Image (cartoon, rainbow, N blue to C red; front, side, top):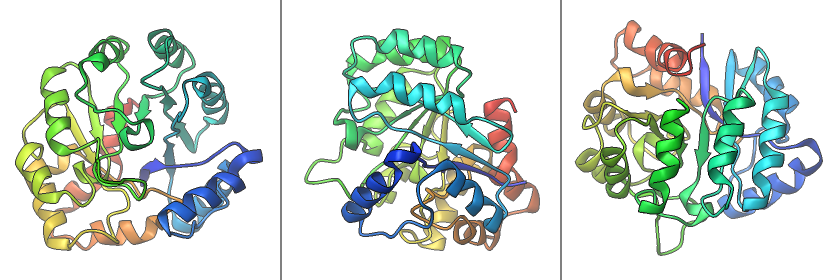
Length: 264
């Protein structure tokens, strides 16, 4: 089984516009049409059994509609996280509603939402999510949107993870896209409540660096992810398959860690 822990899709009537804008920003052509059905079609082509969709609220007003939609798309193939915006006045209430909707966790994106993950104003939110047993996943490191400021750096994540030991943190892109030395220095292997996902690495990291970070953090805390529609899952599957890891370690990365974390 392969569970892709990092994918994106949009409501059908905005998918084309959203993908066009994001493609212009990133310079990357998408491999799906951005809809849930498009994701499912690609999953069949790429032999992916389940996908975790990670929606992002770029405005506080988007929280409720995104979470209602996220709840409506969950089925045997699709697992969805919810979305919260750090500036929303009702963020704690919406966290409780995410739990009631049956969503599996919460996605934040420091670069799109312009906040630092170790900002103390976020700590009551982290405490609430820990009480609700909802893991939180962040974009980590550089993003095509980034300018001179990168909000979600490994050092700032280390502070947040250390200060909130009861919350399960997942930092996408192996802890910090294009910030591999800082990932090793501040994050890898240092916190029991921290996972990394492998999303979109086939274009940005060497095999030696990837293996080094996986071994430092241990395969027990690594989740396979592709960042579809921005990368082909099969490229990232081959990347992991070709690493000198045992079959049992690869099974953990491809699905067993995700199943344990999400209780599925």
